Length: 235
Image (cartoon, rainbow, N blue to C red; front, side, top):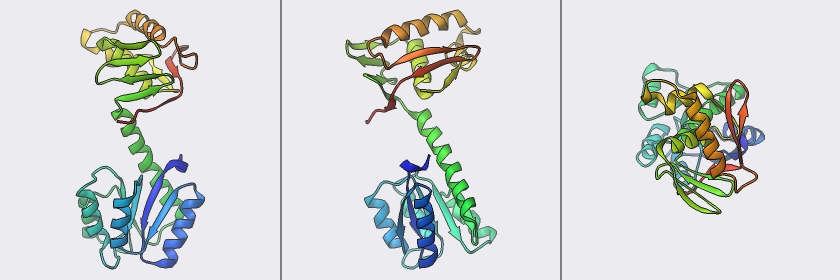
């Protein structure tokens, strides 16, 4: 999972910083090392990062100050603090600054990697859940406008067609559990409409028939899977 992630690493201990950068790069991350808080802020403003690792005690600008300045313009990018301190007040201060995790030195490289992976999994899931625009093979799908556009033109979807296709897209190339889809799309009707969902699945298949690389397949006893090349559409 790590080969697409960029990490901003701010650590004033030269030996530790270089060791961490080399270790992260060996794990497949792109890691930018900055020796102080000022350099870290410049790097953050000029780049796009998946996660920041900030040492608390740095020259020119400490980690807490850097985190406050990052959070002034970016509330989403995860932050992990590194510190030699183990005081409760410092840990609380770190979380007040918007930290996602806090690691006390000394620590193992494996522990750091596992914490990074756990945070990136959570943020990736959240972004997927928040998606409203998708590229589905030769189609584009805007779930906010309820519009599916393909080789034959654009189609305005009904509320249930739109909701079901959005769930399939958010679980693309993975199984969408039948019970979950029923309880999510048909819940307001007071009872699950299994046969109705089968009808809507058939409709969606017909809407997507112009691209042979896109299909909705039945997974016996579980649900459905949208098989396709799919990415988030640029806003």
